[in-house]
Length: 243
Image 1 (cartoon, rainbow, N blue to C red):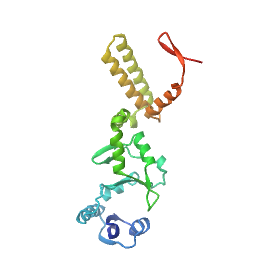
Image 2: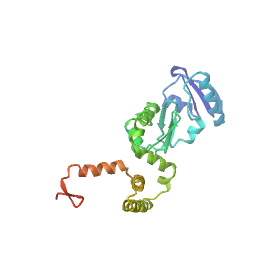
Image 3: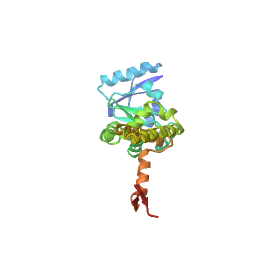
Image 4: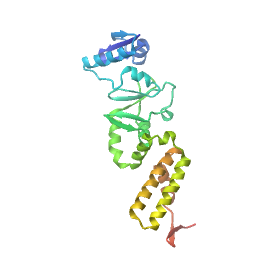
């Protein structure tokens, strides 16, 4: 049986099939009213939203039946996203979904977004689950989206299944192809071809880094840290470091 419950104290209407555990144990409220009950999860989901609108309360983004189907992933409301740790996962090893829809915007959970989530999540007062505020995530995403072209590349690749079905060996072969085209463009003094080949090579390297478990920003930073204090001199058009 599914129950639509009302907690007037906090102006909340929710749905559950276990009132004692969900309302009394997890949320800590003894005073609540059962507004509706049904054996149908679909009817309960529809009624929950209907009553949330009627009482002018916060409306869940995901209907109850959909949220239940996402138990191994997330539970979303209009203000928060909770990461369900049904297997008691630590947030740092959590199997995150590919994306979260916030403010009608699809935010792909690339390395940068995941770093933000892992640093800005909060523990639920009712359970061991962790949650974030949707608006805070959206604000961070909006402020940083245009500043990191690598995120756009990874989102593009993610949409096309490159990370799910791709292979670093094939990306390496593709890199050889792109650098070959770069060499040809350089020999022909083809400026447009040079720009295209450099850009394509960066895209491939971005995807290659992701497929081997890192990100291109980390690789670039590591290289720069290595060379930043390096001394040497130019010889025959090449910088030769001091030994």
